[in-house]
Amino acid sequence: MAKSTTQYICQSCGTIHPKWGGQCDGCGSWNTLVAESSEATPKGLTTGKGKKVDFVALDESAEDAARTATHIGELDRVLGGGMVAGSAILIGGDPGIGKSTLLLQTVIKVAQNGLQCAYISGEESVAQVSLRARRLGLASQNVLLASATSVRDIVATLDGMSAPKIVIIDSIQTMYIDNLDAAPGTVSQVRAASHELIKLAKKRGLTLFLVGHVTKDGQIAGPRVLEHMVDTVLYFEGERGHQFRILRAVKNRFGGTDEIGVFEMSDLGLAEVPNPSALFLSNRQQPISGACVFAGMEGSRPLLVEIQALVAPSYMSSPRRAVVGWDANRLAMILAVLETRCNIRFSDKEVYLNVAGGIRVGEPAADMAVAAALMSALYDVALPQASVMFGEIGLSGEIRGVARMEARLKEAEKLGFSRAYTPPAKPFKGLTLPIKAVETVADLARELFGAPARKKAVSV
Image (cartoon, rainbow, N blue to C red):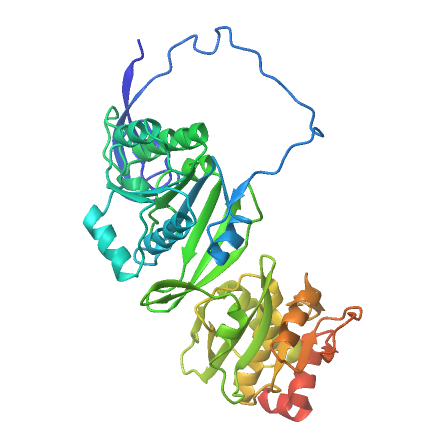
């Protein structure tokens, strides 16, 4: 018989400790160790005779997974073309960001096209979910609602009926298995509950959506193994005070990663944004200093956003550097390159950088746009109207090429831009957009502001 032991498991990272301690040795979090009982593995479990495993050749033909459209274009894009039967999808995001609203809209859309769906909430009552659906103007007879937290009851119900094609579990941290001596939301409960629900999804061929809470660092709460168990991991990003929401795929066994879907929060729920570039640039007025349009890539989609910079005098020994939507370490590198390679002084200035629209830019291709916005703010000279730029800056001041240059330029041309500043590259066929190739950041400063403007900012 298996022997029961007590272990202390970190609720942030899942590290197991033999005894209680104030700080977790794995992630450094304080007061996250919770006692949980476990059964030791009986000796000889792996020494018995097992059944033969069948192997197939790697080049053996296999059919593509059949997909079911959610009829929400942005969600289908992120999923790789639609939902796959028997797959488990984990979606995380900050409280109130719109996870439940998106999934409720999804099941309504799918149900309106003839498929039966089930929405199981462990946080809200059936009346609360129905009230939200009516407030959003959604209704369908093919959506079954339930309020339950017992995984045993949920599995028995879904396995004993004509199982729906789509099942929503909101949220996995509220589910529990009654034969585990641990509270709901702990590492053991989340891991075991997810395993049982995913096993049911594989057995019955249904698509399972799991809603996951996130920690203060923005990571899905619970053991990291949860993200390994599911087939797809989606993060719902955005500021609660901002209307835009970004749905990002960070893992997808049935499609590409780093794809994004853009939504806009409205009184009737989440609305798709099929052309986010036009939306992010819709508030642009007359050219002003410190603003530069960057042509970026999010997955396979070109995305144009505005990068804004503000440079102000500082009377402190350590001037402030504030960044929203970009990497603060990369900003420090760009400032160092401008000071060293171009003799442009920022050491006595406060620098503020913002990516308009609430989106976060993570690719190095934004370096040249950031440098141009910083110089424009410092000189108080607006950049050429209807211009767009992209390129990576090296430590020696050279501007390097980036991927998917043609797609970026085509998106800029489609939106009516009349000039592009890019790294040196071969000509692109079919493009009428004038392109100015820039080799170094010093050449960029001379091209945009000229020698007089540059000399004015140099301090001896």
